[in-house]
Image (cartoon, rainbow, N blue to C red; front, top):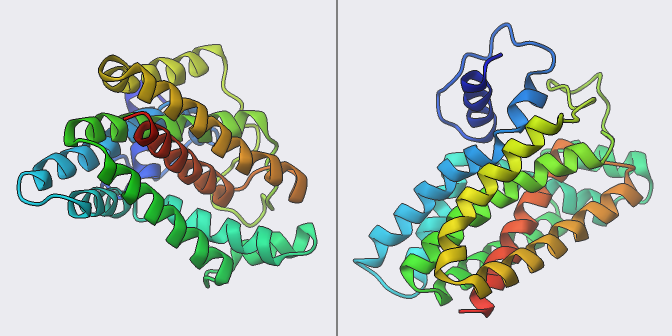
Length: 252
């Protein structure tokens, strides 16, 4: 798989865009594609940012922020929101490792999942609404790339905790080599340059709070189920978004 193909597969995995044929994939396609998760995040962040800037010409207050968050959810097929809801239900309702994993596989949403979705949506929208349009656009670009980088790093730092015999995607042996990790860092840094130049304090507070929020999901995942699953990766992505936007808004 070439680098272009790896990026297209990352885009196909992370969004609903009709790119990259999924037939006859190599067993390690996900590992190779994961180095471009932040690049796929840039695409999602750019669409969300453009939506917010355009909407800001017609409305003020919460409307542009709501439309921006809706645009990202539509483009990703609510992939990460679904993972957050499943993870919240599993971690909140399960009493053993196996029961938590079983709950996470259930497509129905429970009380913990509904609360997690509602609170994170409100926090993301509220934080965006506090920022000026172009500052919010820069924050969206940074947070969507950074959140996908966080999922890639989690895949490299944690063992896969799910049942590999029942998943359609091979998550095991997901470690990237040095060149792969370098691509992740460089792409993420490029996406964060606009907000870093515009407001270093917003970038710093956003990065610190986002890292703390992402770790707040990584730590219980290791303790409660022994690693990560696809749902946990979605939850880490959402927690990073919440943390970065809140941090950026706090430093506005």
